[in-house]
Image 1 (cartoon, rainbow, N blue to C red):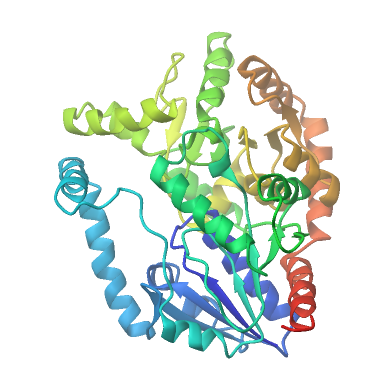
Image 2 (image 1 turned 90 degrees about the horizontal axis):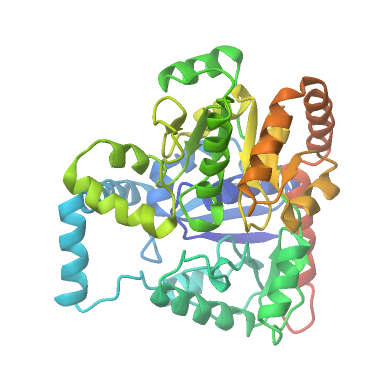
Length: 440
């Protein structure tokens, strides 16, 4: 088979890690098939995708720039220009001026419009056996003469967390209805999300298929690497790590309240935050009036702030984005990974911790429990809407070395039995099924 994999999503977060892991799994699971990754040009340069996949002769990288296919050299040049522009508009006064001009002079909404693939790109896609969308969000539905498969990761925009502006919600809803009204084959990573798809889109054409995910951890950091990363960020021992972002459903406010409660009771447990926006906590504390005004609005919106007597650089270490290697080292060196989210398709941080031999403390939301049952992994669980219970569970987890060790050993065995090759095998079954349907 010839599979076209589209990942127009340029975020350095879970979406990109998912696509990279799946492509590697597909290349190993089906050496006789070819997999062409149509990736956003910024991700091609930033993540070194050409070098990353050079070990797989059946994988080819095709950069997308505004939906058009470009060569790697052109993608790299354009990526550097965009990176400089993106940095500039994130500076406080520039960002406010840019937003004002976009709305009042250019008459454009703040929400980024969905990507529209040009006709020449669609003609190329028609030459494949299957087209697969790794991230069917922020891309306009299109018609091609070959089967299309898409992973619908979650339906966050359907929930009232405050993550989506009205314009972005409207755009996303329009795209979702457009995709699910076609013959696209939906895939989800838990039955929980498949059930949400059926609930929100009862007129969907194809029944969703469920393929569970494996770990996103791509490195096996040594003790020396762990020590080096901890020293780089001046971290104490015995910390919890929460790979996340500041979106409300991630529930960082509840986590901070839980740790504040523990500190007031004489139990100080350091917390390391990584992911988009978390380093803005440092800007809030810096005392810069311009930055404080800008970022306080962000954290007021998301209800995340340093409170309860916690101190930055002492109790909470807000790192922002870190590299994949640094993330894996931070997880391995932690006393536990904590995932307090109120809504997910499943827990990526837990998947990484289970693989790297680190204890997991997690909210007891249904998709996480579903993951644990499927993978035969273990975690301490709490109600994400009860900070006091969260605090009690954290304290119990870090105080019981014997139980924690047993849970880590069982989880390591569970993750060893389910790799990205197994994930890819599940996806290949879906690809073969859609390509063999009559009237394709």
